[in-house]
Length: 399
Image 1: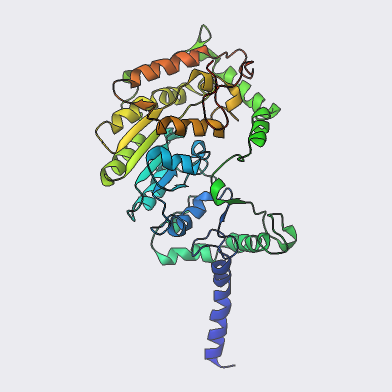
Image 2: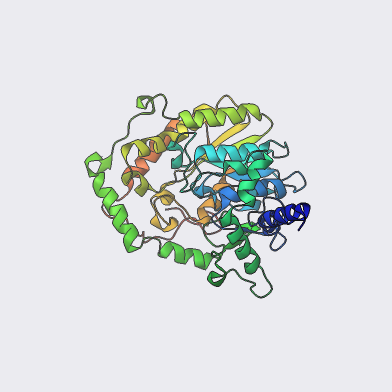
């Protein structure tokens, strides 16, 4: 056999894995999926974001609003979000466990082309991490976020990606209209989520959501929380938590927030940033160490101070007693259901809940009072009154 033919055959064989990954493209990195262009893999947001930004949030998509944050930002309705901030079309770039630096990187990639005008950003307790820290069991895939094409070979020749590509094709074949397991092909389970549910942790159906709320605290979870509560008993005074003042905190307590937010506010003055301090369940403060709960209580004040000099940034806070002291809205100590996400959006759309230097200290004082009102002796007890926030996010009854 001639040398040229051997070389050609060798190169063809070498190119086959990359060609397969390119065609299957489970992360939709090279192109929109040929098999399910309206669906995304669940639980793989870090790996899918580059393709999503390139093919779904590009200049031709009509998207001018992005939803940013970690898991607490996963329940926001796209249409309500766009309406709340005055945008036209929203897309969620939130993903579970997103560390501050990871969120900032993705937001910056979205803003760079210039067509995004609104960022709806939920800042949660996870912002205690440093800028360089990734909250992921695997290394954050930086090679997918740069412009070096050589780094793309990490994806094209990844054994897991070829395996996933096979699953992706089979899950979307005519013989298998729904996702399922393909162990006989040596392929992993593929779960996909349609566009409107991308990034969401719970289904849209209200009855299914109620079942989630009714079953959230299983035996193992309750055991874990009780263990945490017991560990924090020494921090209680007369059954209540004590909090330092904002001035008593270390001057670098909110260094991560300051560096990330001011950098983006300054570099993108034509983009409107809507920052949300979300309603964290009061149980969270009793079951976490003093360092975490102190930062969480005073984070709204820090966000207001950071944003004060930037006309393109607004901060909104939510500490409603009938929400954060009602276990029925939460699936754990932090994650609230879709009804509360909708309530947040409706309140902002109505011009309510904006925090300023004039009212943020009162907001913090009221938050601490509400936390003190929580019945820590019966942390898993459900109130006997009707829930005051409907699944549609509307206030239906005052406590």
